[in-house]
Image (cartoon, rainbow, N blue to C red; front, side, top):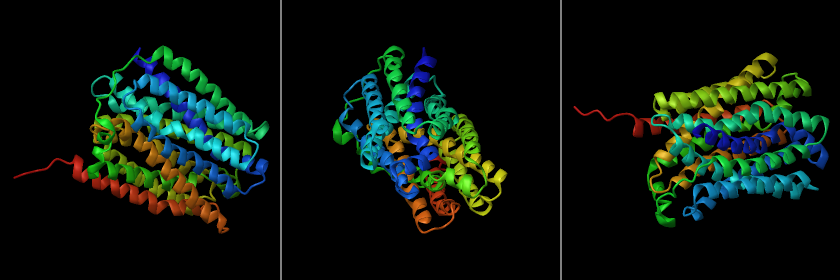
Length: 386
């Protein structure tokens, strides 16, 4: 029963993963269909990310509800937002649809993480959270390449319609396989924010926003980079997206395993440092096709290898505000996505080559690594007295 429950939770992150990451693969097709520039189309990525940041606060008002009921409401919102995006007649409506589709993202990860840890056996909390997040990595392994193929050969609108259908299936799965879990302790609305008085959650959130923002400077414009700099054609890009997804799946699995064995902050800091080096190498060697593809897989590996440890760390350092704390990681993740997409778009708008967004991402990733190292030294290393 526990396995079925975790798989059900991962179905939700699969839908969210398709909604979020498919946009990178279909960006040129959306831009062409709506007669806008690539940089303007990047606003659809930012709109989703802003929706995530706004939607996570819904959990502050829903802390008295049963976790299962919250999950059902969020699944309905996933279906509705993506349906709006699927039928959007123009730029503004699609922007609104993307914002609505992003609203349940952080909240779903927040309540889903809490449910996963409550279902987990002792000593395997990080692996349970990683299994929930696995749906998003599978979305990148299978869903995003399918979305890119659908967009190339039929219509990008089918991508968002497909997400809506998955969300409807999620509603039925949640009703059947998620057990009734007791409500969290009632700490009141103000009590939900009390954990923010500590520096620990702020360091984790800053690391998440900066680290993921650095990677998204590059990843938001991955398709034009691969086609115009690395020399791949559109059909090859769809295949490369499968490799990128495989990196995410492997990274998510390794991140969960390593975090249960070592300290999560140390694991995340090491991986974030590797990501910064990979971004620099992408800037220098993006014109070498096989090396660009290899570094892409390394970056996507790191992107999701840090997810489970960061999610677990916020749960541990948000006493009395677990709902908001767990959702805050996704707020920071998508705030970083929006910032990274915007910063990467600035380079393109100034007519720089498509490898320059990776260079812009390097200092952001390094700052994220620094925050995690600071957190590790202050909150994870034992204090030695003599």
